[in-house]
Length: 386
Ligand code: TGC
Ligand code: FAD
Image (cartoon, rainbow, N blue to C red):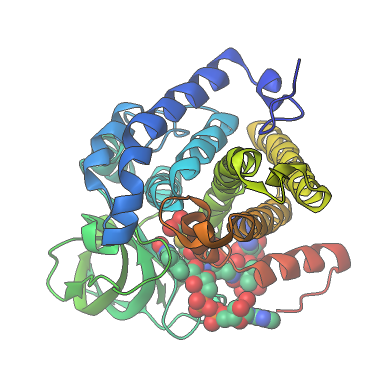
């Protein structure tokens, strides 16, 4: 029996029946609905918003949350969802990451009962889209140094400042915004249309073109006390959301790498140079084998991370290692696949260049590679180099 080149260690056999079903159903959605449109969306710089009801219909929004119309799936299932979606495009996985891990998660974890009932069921149905405002223009790696602030005014809060590089911003019905207060960093739910709040789209991106990225501006925006997340104060609020999203990215990028390798395997077997298939050259086989090695290692790393998460034992430095390793793996593979396709590698007919450009964002957002290396360095040494 030949091995599956995209699953050399048969990770599929380590999944439960339910996990396999989740993977298959999301895989079908990607094959039937995402892949036919995604390249055009990328070229047109357009998020395929028409897919949101399909994503919601499969229970992919807030999929690992319990109650409030959410599917209550385990962490491995959430990882597999991200992997399949990112096999299509990082922008689609980004949409689901932000909605699920960065917006629904904090409302679920830190929101009042009223906030959960008001927002979560509609968010699970994709009828309310969220965005997450943490990064500011002067430096996203150090969110503790945030300038956006909120001051109490009677029973309300007044929010001033700006956020930068915010996924979903211009299409979002609400923003979960982190702002400095006298008590420390707090989370605010700011609804679209609130006077003084604007979310213009950032145009002219070379990466994540099938995803909406925006700035957020707050000019004396009044937020009622009822829209403040009561359950958390401090940087650990937003950082705990990032832990959830980074976990999903560690799985997601495997899908992007698999898509690149799958296409390259086909191409290298059929392209004949010097009288033999490209794939019959030693240096090409070494490069292909190296890609398979790195994908396999990333799969096993993600699987064990998922098992730790499902057991409630996952620690942030472990997530940093996985986010760093797997993003680096996927970006290097996408670049190498682009190269082995020759001139065709720059054509929109092939997927690696799109994944490569997307992965330049993915390795940067949710903590740059350096931030994750330093997080691990701090864990190993007990000394902070930040
Ligand atoms: P530090 O002193 O380490 O921590 C402050 C407090 O937070 C706690 N904590 C965490 N809690 C949960 N999860 C984590 N990952 C946590 N990391 C830290 C920590 O225990 C502490 O709690 P307490 O109770 O003692 O106060 O904070 P620091 O200022 O030293 O910062 C550390 C550093 C640099 C790692 C952090 O600032 C960082 O991660 N920077 C990178 C910022 C980042 O990743 N931004 C991402 C923005 S969102 C985004 O990119 C979305 S893209 C989505 C998409 O489209 O898919
Ligand atoms: P900076 O923090 O200015 O970093 C610049 C460089 O300095 C990087 O190479 C970094 O690794 C390096 N560096 C930083 N500190 C150190 C150090 N101590 N030692 C050595 N090197 C260091 N943010 C959100 O809040 N919500 C979103 O939805 C969101 N979506 C995004 C979507 C896209 C497409 C992109 C590109 C970004 C998104 N971001 C979002 C922002 C993202 O999280 C930030 O870009 C990222 O955290 C880095 O911040 P920065 O861009 O300000 O770079």
